[in-house]
Amino acid sequence: MVRRAVRLALSNPITRDRTLITLLNRDRSLITLDIVQRLIATRRTDLLDSLLGSATPGRFASPKVRLVPDFYSGFDRWTPQQVESYARLLTSHFESKKSSQYERVRAVRILGRLPGSADRLAEYTEHPDLPIVEAALTALGRSDQPEAAIELLARHVDTDRARVAVSSIATCAKSLGPHQVASAVAPLIDSPKITARKEGVRLLAELHAPDAMDVIQTLWTQPDQHRDVRRAVVFACRWLLDTDPAWRIFADAAADPTVADEILNLRPELLPIAQRHRTAELIRRIAGGTDSRLATRAIAVLHRWSRWSPPDTAIMLAHRICDLDELGLWLPAAQALVDTIATAADDSALTTVVDRLLAAGDHVIPGRDLPALQRLVGLTTTLGAAAKRSDAARSAAGTLADRLSIEPFWRAAAIDLYLAQIRWAESKPTARLIQQAGALATGALVDHPAQRLKATLPSALRTARPETMLAIAGALSRSDELASLLAAVTLTQQCGNRFGWSTPWVDLLAALRAHDTIDIRVAAAAVWMVTE
Image 1 (cartoon, helix red, strand yellow):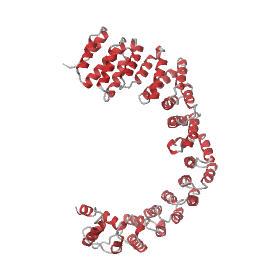
Image 2 (cartoon, rainbow, N blue to C red):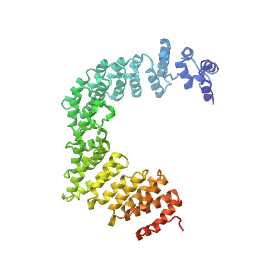
Image 3 (cartoon, one colour):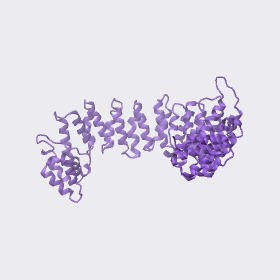
Image 4 (cartoon, one colour):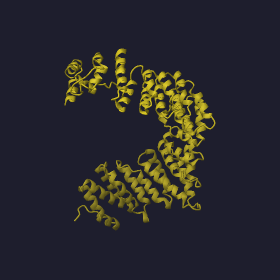
């Protein structure tokens, strides 16, 4: 309750300063509250002299306890004497035999926030207690003397405390000018520790040190260089792609399976537009390479780069799909080809793939089972899924459906592709697509369109308008095709159950029950508006 009352009393900025003095005069232990400490550190620094180092008895502190406030900011507003007084208080607290290890670590971390912290922390970096050393190394990363802090941190780069020291050097380096970065990270580059060298490379490139490219090239060409360091070099080159040596490293990396996937981790938004075309060309080269593991990864990310990819990318993917001697790459290549079509709106490569796979339908390979047929099924399934999301893929699905409709063996796939183009908000185009599918559904496929619609309608009806669905069902009920009429029965059943059996749906079901075709009458009679 008291804490909340203090917070409310200090909420008015007009009276806040006066209220703060009144509260402290009544109870000096209120300085233990965070809001009071923040105000003293950032606004009422004149109160520091009377509070630092003196007893603060009251509700929140015992008179026997010497309070050490936790100030974390506002030091730029303090006088040098106030900074020094607080530093002495923290040092005394650290050296007290009554202080726990947690309290000592906290004191060291706060010391690191004070102006001139590098000199104060130097002695703690050699402390025998590991948590104290790591706290000092961490605090050096926030020092306002980055050069002096880096000098201290460099002594620990080759030790077991390298993890903390390297991280703090990275933080300090970001406070330096570009011309100072190379000398600051030199201890990292020269370290035998792999982690240190990796971080040094990243900092050189990210902070654009003038001689960054020379150092990175030296590391890249160094014999027996560790793989992780080479990967770090490739990673760092993303910041240096305005130089030709960086592109040469990228080109070499694209041919090296141990580091090439660092190029694949790039995303277009991380690069300037002018550099995306060359990067997309490298990724396309990896996707067309002989290393199947790398090619699989490259193909999986091609869709990110489709706007900048070379014109022959779709042809390369088509070859990957149609090469029946190659296993494992055709499915990601099919997905990538469909994604490319959805972006580029050019389905010529897709038509080529379909024609080649149809021609190879009877091709027999020992130990395999109809590989061309399986690939074509996979391609049509992938395209059907994409047609529901993309207008370009929807257009390609129509082209492929027309092509497969003349192949008796592939009529089921053609039906699925026609139905995949449906947009339930468009009554006439939807009815036409279902009728096109129904025209192919003969023999064993006669109820195929109806079954497909039955599976997809529940989700579609969540957003569909009843009048639009009624128009579609009405158009199908007037069809001459048995499959389209069965689809009308399915549509009527699903919509009646969803929207309620209002008069238009009752009349439509009655018309279907009175149809001249016995199969339609039987199907309509199996739809019940009310169960007994």
